[in-house]
Length: 409
Image (cartoon, rainbow, N blue to C red):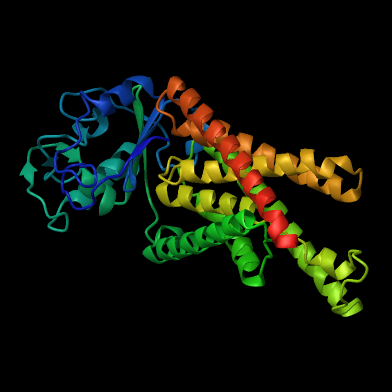
């Protein structure tokens, strides 16, 4: 989903990271997003909207609100909701003035879902912790940045329906903590270095041998991605892509574990017997290259999407190009080399190629489409990424072929 990162220190207004002017909802890019999107999400991580994907109500089943609140357009703010049970109004993310309720709640008002929202907003925004000027007016409250940061509230607006839903994030959840964010960041940096190392080995025509700590890290990261991404507010397409990437990563991890077990078995049974007569010994077969680039990129996509709460990240195009170039290189290797011999190895190469192709198409169709701001933007972006991937794969194949005589001469 297209997104804008918010500054977390520009109380009380919503401001883009690195900017000083408050966000405007009645003109500019956000107004266009409101007109053309089926859903717009505002949370601590930023503002995102869905222009080319679906966001059914079932995706928000874990939200606190039992019913959506009618929220109508209003000048200088996202929208305004009238709460008849409390004889009050909520203005969401104004661009000029911020108003906080000062009058006490009526007895039993907190029992209703609307009363719970009113109470959460009043308690989280009232006080000196938000570091802002407070303007008091009777029975009127402006939901602002402090509700997102200090109150840990998330809001979802359905512009075409004029309705709004909300929830409060669990502050005790480990997957929302700073420690978890730091761990994911370190893992992403480490895995990306392994991707670069694999590309270097591909260019030099060398095998990519896996090691136990990378395999263990991949397995741990994939297992943690299930509960972590379940807490993200993904669109329906993003949830499908998440499942595809998780299954794809598990498929390759199982292959790595089986290969490691087979190599260990040969070490025990055959030892380190040298090659003789040019024939391939079982030990050499166990040391053949094992592809980990696809699994690495799949896990990187999962982790970066979890951090950004969307697949529309600055790394998406880079990951898609690398994955596509590697997949097309496999296609050229299979069609020009392995398909000539009908053997078990050719069948294995074909199965791996089909898995890579399916994952690549899923990333193009789901991740790139949900990140697009319009249908034409998706078509041009997808075509460009596919073209660059094909050219990159052809270039890698030519480089590998040119390096083979030097490696084996």
